[in-house]
Image 1 (cartoon, helix red, strand yellow):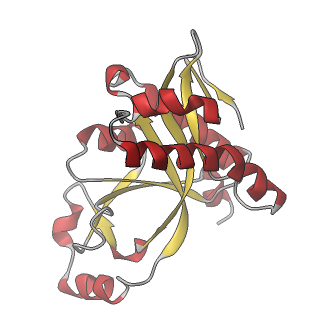
Image 2 (cartoon, one colour; image 1 turned 60 degrees about the vertical axis):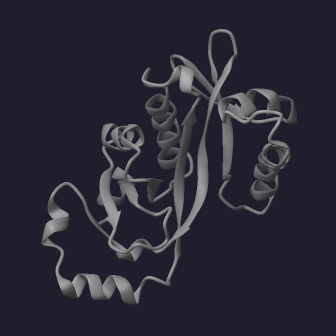
Length: 202
């Protein structure tokens, strides 16, 4: 999968991208464990999508996000599996105050039950943030997921203190939800966007 926008190319990673991706993730050579893990991560996403395609499974992958002019890798973006307890989410933006005790109980009952969704991932290197690159990449990925792949919906996850990521979710038109419970700790704020074609199907 290769997607182009006015300023970006979203393309498969290769092992040669490791130095650039270490810079994007702010990992130094001194952190040998994280370097080794990132090398495995880059290699896995360079080969996994082809295997999934042969198995007729979703082409999950993180991709290199590079500038169309100059080819500098400035971030990562992709469609990834998200396996979480989505039933325990509640609306944000003031609506959460209306959550009833019964709703919390129902959420607690379902807390151990995870289900899969198509997740949206984006990460931009610090020196290139606040320039709209994350939104631009995300819009291209959503268009591909809804158009070519026929995905029903896309989710994105972040922490409550990640205002920049939440702003991207809002700009994408996602409906924001929050975890009604304390667990799992990484599952705090979730944006959900449904394919417009779903409404036409009833």
